[in-house]
Image (cartoon, rainbow, N blue to C red; front, side, top):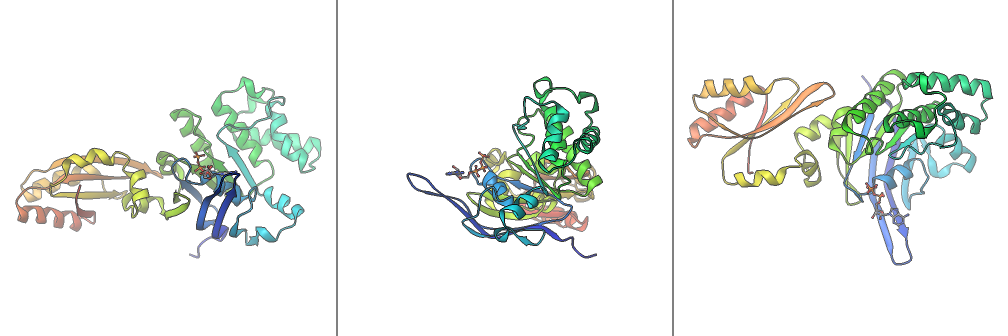
Length: 336
Ligand SMILES: Nc1ncnc2c1ncn2[C@@H]1O[C@H](COP(=O)(O)OP(=O)(O)OP(=O)(O)O)[C@@H](O)[C@H]1O
């Protein structure tokens, strides 16, 4: 099967800001490909450059160097009018929702349609369809001040979808929401992606958001892309310090086990944790200590890792590693 087309391609992008005091380089040598229909995550700590990257994707910021291609079009070559048209294909939602407080729910969703010149009745009809899609039909006449955070974000999603965008950019869209509301908004985004085929770009500082809905992820660290790939492989085999910090946020707690001969076992959705460890103990006739365990659900599959302290006896320890590898698991000796 051929790979889907690249809807967003970023080549050698750099963005610097000239301030009164100095020049701040917010992004350096960024190369990224986001494919049509995927849910792509961009994760990084505060100040890493995420928001600047999003603003470069829709050309609210012009890159200092490098290029952004949207659906094959070089954004730097577009006239102002063409750029405005292209931006209609890129919806956006924000942490603070950015709704118009003087307009009702329906008024907010109609707003981008009015700007695009859609006749009033047609705009209202489309707005009601979108309101139904986000599950808020009964709140059509409510003002933003009468809505909860989750409801406001649903209205913002409906508004962002009004002009049938190809891509939806979500900049920390769940950061102001509690965990339960976050899950429901992420489920809605996943549903929109599946039903409408819209490419979704999720910008966040939270790994759990990435795990919950993204297929691919780029880790941005100190203005650069540290690592990029499928979420499951980055989660199971992080290559860089930046990725490890996000995947093992409690890394420092493991330090006390330094010096033990330990083995890291990775679960990749094809085996479950308990029978594997129990069977290994039975097969090798020796107990192990579980030093660290972390299992997660990524895209409906169980993923996780455990770190066990192996027996002192070298032969038994080697036998255990061999046993795990025979089961098709990634099992490697680690220094904690
Ligand atoms: N307009 C600007 N002028 C000067 N510096 C800027 C400007 N916008 C961003 N920066 C700087 O660029 C760097 C990256 O900022 P950016 O907002 O993109 O990070 P972020 O990862 O989105 O952070 P956060 O999660 O805290 O919002 C920071 O050092 C920031 O101070």
